[in-house]
Length: 223
Image (cartoon, rainbow, N blue to C red):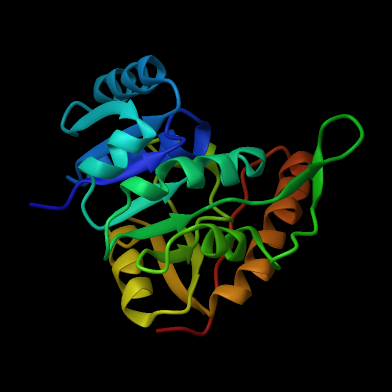
């Protein structure tokens, strides 16, 4: 049986879509939120959309405590630091936080067209600085469309770059994400490379706006 995965911010578009995709391939998912009622409602909605999946919803801290190895963070950048501080005491040695945070800056009209400068270098490096040393930090999912994830009737055909300083931690995250059909997770290098991966998000958002579609990336030349 697959280990349970906690998705913090699972009531949002990216987290909810990932919950559906993982649940559809037999991974038990706990949807976490600051608001337990919202988390439970999202879990019920996921179960209705994916009857074969196993979903539950609870507060972020309890979701972390119930999770196996991997905890996914899918909150907005404005909530990243506060969320990480709140869950830090609940994280166990050996757990890995997969951080999908992108420090998007809203442009005039509310369209995020660039990333904010982060003192640590990237949102993922900020996560590393905020979490205890015994907890792993890996980044990924920056270029995956939330709308594509939620559409279970559509096959994915995208890559995601997974960055981190520990090869075993990256391998665990890559193994999990690779369970999703059509999603190829690729080792993107050290955690500092997250700065580059995060900056791809506003580029893709711009493409989506101009072309009225949902774009992704593919890395060619790999086996």
